[in-house]
Image (tube, rainbow, N blue to C red; front, side, top):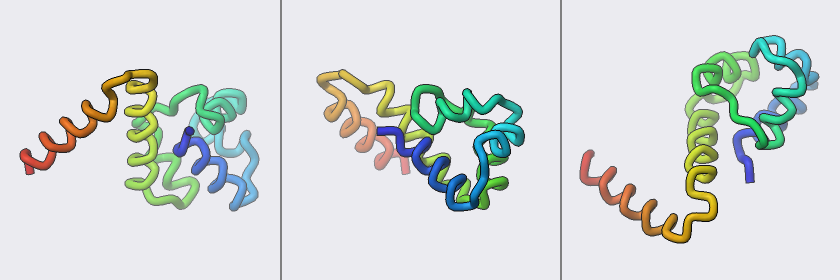
Length: 96
């Protein structure tokens, strides 16, 4: 499940924007943006602020969805993924 791409498509369609309009702002072709929306390609992290501004979207929400997709991709197929995530969560809590 690609939440970031789904959100981008939802925002784009809600504003009646074409792929080419958003792709132009990101300086990429429509095929690349289409792949990002489908989850077969990842947007570069540094492009998220520009995208959030253009789509009038919450930057933190987009960044959170992007990061979650990155983690899911990394852990895909790992039998110990849940244990690893629990370990990371504990370490993050202790760092605060």
